[in-house]
Image 1 (cartoon, rainbow, N blue to C red):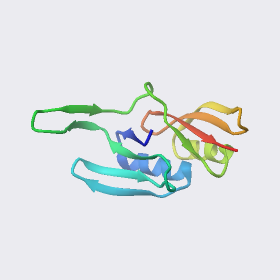
Image 2 (image 1 turned 90 degrees about the horizontal axis):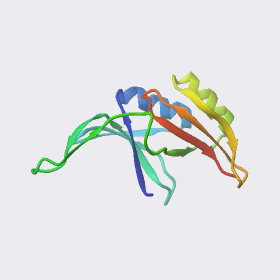
Image 3 (image 1 turned 90 degrees about the vertical axis):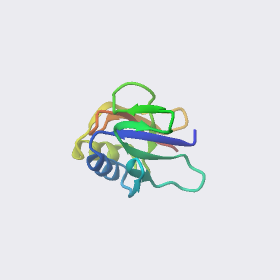
Length: 128
């Protein structure tokens, strides 16, 4: 994996949610398709962005795709550096909800699943 996009019905609300939960800055860019919020990454880490929900057209042949938030489909897991307990507290403060409480990983880390302000199911995790 090298890139992910999280759809948002309310772009500003989604940016605020992820900045609070992940305790990071999201760089908001104005693209041809609209606002695009890029997550901070270190070096060769997988990157990603928040994308406003819409119907996107890509070429003169009419290729298009509908990008909508939802509770099903692939789950993206985001790293939280200051611990899962603190991040899960921020989820609820930021308007989201915890779906799965912290679960242990074989490598000593933990993961949990949350619902963001846009209705997306997202994983959060730590690594030892």
